[in-house]
Length: 183
Image (cartoon, rainbow, N blue to C red; front, side, top):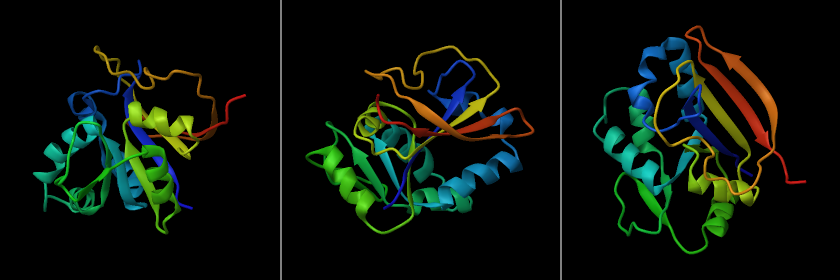
């Protein structure tokens, strides 16, 4: 069975919105290798509408820029949305009907990891149903203003088991967690 890995860039104070406004000062070859290895270990992306809208706009215009952009653009994408309709652009498929059942079917198909960026409503739904196998928080050493905090819409506690921690020379820390069943 494939694994669903949720990967989210966050500030020290837990803000995940608009990382393009505060993360680039900390990107270097070491961190880019980490995010590239993560992307290339996946053969599909799953996302909610907000992430889809932002990523499709940002990445489709970067076709041919580098191997990372080409991989991002080439991967099949599964999109959960109540407002979008088909056909979708950017090599994407709209998940229809029961999202949980649709994701279970995708997980049961042969292949590599399924990567999800962000941690919004879709993440919370998948975690409630035990479908997220790993949560990766990439914590940047900056506190930023704004809303859009990681896990702010959780309706119940989500226990996590720490799997690993990796630090980078720019002060960024990648924390890998495994969601645990509710007690």
